[in-house]
View 1 (cartoon, helix red, strand yellow):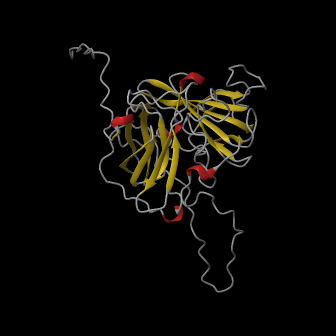
View 2 (cartoon, rainbow, N blue to C red):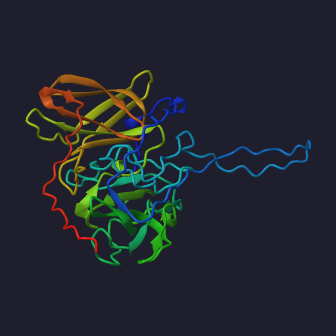
View 3 (tube, rainbow, N blue to C red):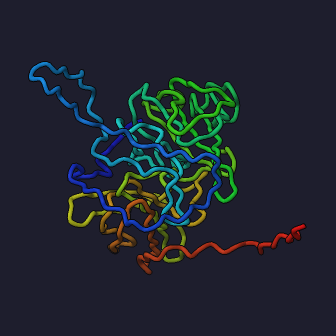
Length: 357
């Protein structure tokens, strides 16, 4: 697959300052987890020389981390808002590019008008280790995951792994998918921990270059049950995520619609498109979004777009470790109000009280 980084460029990334955390208590997220694992990011320290002059030895220097300018990820599970769910780590380590290809995000259209992307692609060199994004049990190994036909070497996902996680979301089971692998190092039924190597990056299946295709699915391990992984993987510390719903004046979603972002006080410019039409694309149950842009340094951003030959713009703040939200409804313009809290679709039934003997 070709990668064109110029379309969604970040200028002056070396000067991005980490934002201080607010210090307020973190609400307990709504999830069911049997094993809490907090994975610390690698810490790179300098070499301390021997106090004896000229007698110390230096180790052979390794390759400089490609993504060393990014802060470490928040520990998981991370959920500042009760409706956010950063439950997974990146499946690629921090010493490689571990953020999604900006030109082919979830909901993107690349190969054809009716082929919509159901995950994110992480462009990484072949043979790069792939890590489990969370603890769970391996439920798929090998060819045929997309077609659900074991051994099908014509399957577009190539060699792939599926993991059923030890935790869920609102009572629903969560799965993650890892596709286009060159080598698999786990077996069906094996339990893996967060960060455990499950295989290597490859270019098997329908792809034009080595990368990892990563999906989040629930409640079923099905191609029809995918959700945007950028709303599920932890962002870098001090950074946040933008979600939006872009429609026309009659509230009909605008597909593959271009939205621009500019970070105030910097030359950082971003371009992102709304989800394409068709395919197995599902918005988050709370945000009902058709646009997500992850890994944004906290700060004030100008959002601008062109609708029916007229320019619209607004300003929005990206908060560290959270999802910021906006809607655009054609001639009605922008609105920064978050969605209302979901209403219960049932009446809770109190359990009978058993008298104490």
